[in-house]
Length: 274
Image 1: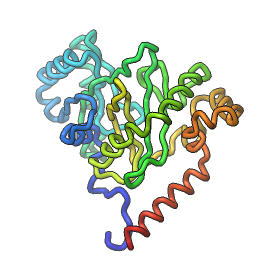
Image 2: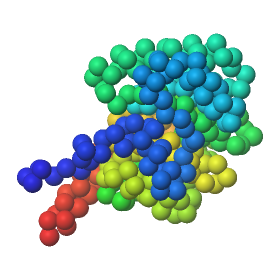
Image 3: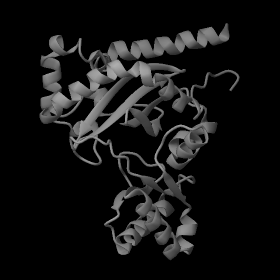
Image 4: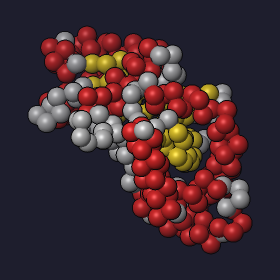
């Protein structure tokens, strides 16, 4: 540790890897995040009926939730439950997650079950709008918004029908970042994380933070935004759109983007040494 520079220390890994821990830290620091219920696997197994009842009450309080593992990505190990879900449906989801956690615990001892409030973007369009900001050493590197009519979606799910909303959201985000930047940086800071991509929804213009990823390299980083038709549209119309959504083209120019990222790391470390 005295000889090698550590950007994100392993000692704080669970702060961002485990959503229930992230949520608890955010709650403790008055950072807006979903309501949640953390469930230890052994407790769920030994007190199954009571756990189902606790989840049912949580659903009644929040109308719609995700019941999921606390530390998996890409929507793995996740069930959407609503006030219309029956006790049997809750029990089936819980049973499946208990087995999943028992399997995951062989390699990841921090795996638990979490019930998390479903955050509705609150607009009348039928879209879910998700925001992501990349942060390094207390500085915003980049940011973008993605959108879909699906409840659970990924960047690749956007198609040419989503282009207009995608452009509008990112144009608004470029203008909005100044007003939310302090809240975004604080949400990363309280997790003691120096590098990460933090995701959030905007509800009444207020960020509701849902997770922090310590690295990025998914579809948007490698291929661009949306499906092939949408990617082509963004490439073909760059001259027209770049002034409106410079954040998108900044992120798409991978060579320049990562050159700047590593220069920022280098400059920060040199400054720290001095």
